[in-house]
Structure formats: C-alpha cells, structure tokens
Length: 248
Image (tube, rainbow, N blue to C red; front, side, top):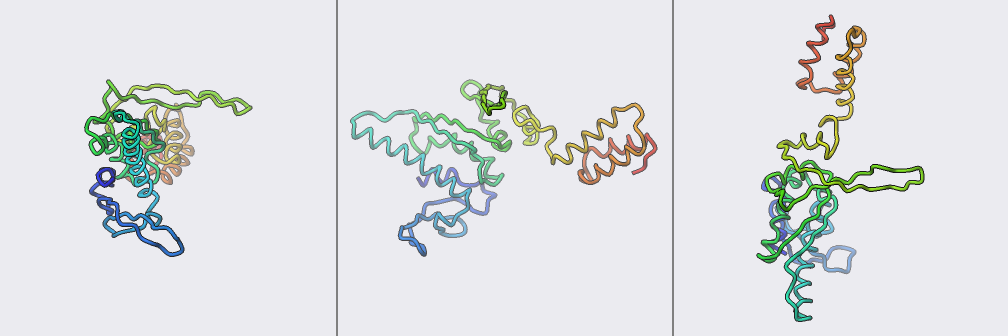
C-alpha cells in the first residue's frame, strides 16, 4: 500500500508532497478508529482530507486490496495467482488538480512494479480531461493501446438512447488546447464560449464583401468584452477594421 500510494502521489510541484499511510486515530463524535494520511501538512484523518486525496487513497486501497485478496484466495484453493489484472476507472481526473491530472495515468501504467514484476495490468479509463490525454502521449503504444470515443448518435422522443463505441486513431497533439479542439473533445476554440462566439461573428463579418462600419463597431465591442488585450486575434481584426475605415 505504501509503495502504490507513493507512486500515485501528486507531482513535486504540489504542496502536499508524498502521501503515506499513517496510524489510525479517534476523532470527535465517532466510535471508529479512523485511518490517517501523512503529507506535508502532517497526519490528517482521511475523512478530513480533500476529495482529490480521498479519491486517490480509495483507488490505491482498492487496487492493493484486490490483488492481495486474490493471492490469499489462490493459496486457500491451492492454485497459482492469475498474472493478469484489469482496472476500470471512470472520470480519472475527478477532483484532481491539473498538475495531478498530468501524472495520474502514467503512474497507473507503472503500478504493476509495486504489485508483482510479472503482473500484466490492463487499464480501461474514461476521461473528459485533455490533460489526461496529453499526459499519455509518450507512453501510448499503438500495438497494444486503443482510444475509443463514446457517442450518442441517436436519441428519439421516447428517450431511447443508442450509445456508439467508436475506435479513433491516437494522434500526438503536443498541446493540451490542441486536444480540446480535436475530434475527441470537439470544442471550436480552446477558450470561453463568449470568446468563441465573438470570434465566429467577427470572422463571418470578414467574409462579407461590404460590411458596414456600424457592424464592425458593434462586433469590435463584443470582441473587447471577450478577448484579452494580447489575444492573437486582435492584429487580424484591427487591420480589417482599419481597412474599412473604423479606428479602434
């Protein structure tokens, strides 16, 4: 448990440091001995830790417990333990800081080293986090790893939902925002929806043959509300506005 918890601990940049199991303690208004976790802030009862820490502790405990219990049962029935293990995780990124999201899947891929050296571990992970996807780019092996997309192509008036599981190619995109705008997540732009809508309107105006000065001024005000001062769309828009006699 100690090794697995250490491997799943947050990265060095985190203020928590390495997570370690502590001694059980009693807490007010509870008759149970409560497990504790030790990190840079001291020894903390698990019920008082953050949702992200509790999730990682739970994940580590379940993995270790399942493997150790399997070995015990194998001895009792006089059979060799299985050498394969499947771990299913939904929403891997839930409650985790972005720094932690970037290392969690890679840590899980190496977790067999803390259980048995010859154990084959298969991970089936669902995520909505581009950070999780970007974090596995250097470890994704097309020969054995697969990327699937769950889609809802059809839903009728009776709420009969058809779910489609479709394999898609894994493309190394390098940047987290590139994952957001890919077919995997489907965002138009890696920004707020207000910025995306403002730029969409501006581009539509740029495609017109004779846009009016008033339309350009109105659109410029929308852009001012949605875009940062150093947004890379500004040079293009300022040039367009000045070409049509509008000074910003």
